[in-house]
Length: 72
Image (cartoon, rainbow, N blue to C red):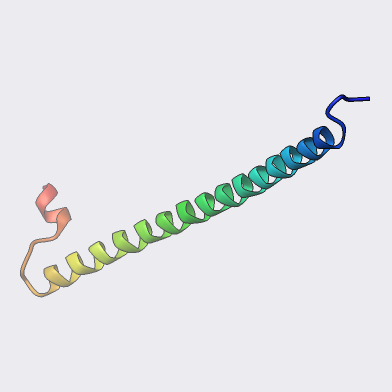
């Protein structure tokens, strides 16, 4: 039998509980990071669409020549 008795098993149980909690927090953090990355990619697409629409409107208004015309 362990000389430390119940304290050793209690300490082990506490350590195991802390490790499980840490693993759970890590899983939640990874899921949150993945969700944030997805949202940022979506937002990037929306911003690109918005830039294209603004450029199209500026061309229609005669403020700026189109990108295709600038490339030639």
